[in-house]
Image 1 (cartoon, rainbow, N blue to C red):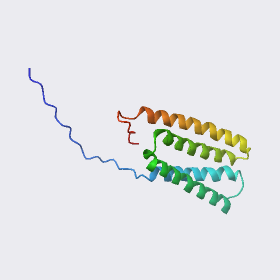
Image 2 (image 1 turned 45 degrees about the vertical axis):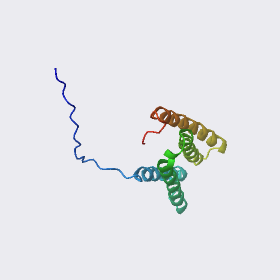
Image 3 (image 1 turned 90 degrees about the horizontal axis):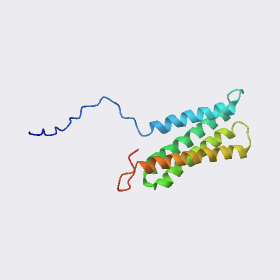
Image 4 (image 1 turned 60 degrees about the vertical axis):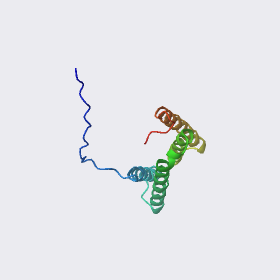
Length: 138
């Protein structure tokens, strides 16, 4: 009995749009900046100080997300995971500190979140490597 030859699959022209690399950092930065200003506002009228707090928070977080996303693949998986964990811990700790809590409680929450994100990212990077030790393209 003759076996059929495998027919190479045709690639269809996809109508899906390609999302730019900067879209995720910009979206996260804008949401983070609005939320930081909203937490600090706490019922008061909007001021220039709140505007600058939100803008600077958005730029710093968006730039950090872009940098880790762009250049994180060149790091070993442990440092790549620690970079995401450090960023998440700092971001959450800063937001929590804006709600008039003690620095100690904001730091503890930031450490807990950072440790959790680091562990989750390390697990993801460790389980998605190929046999040669190269990370999967994220």
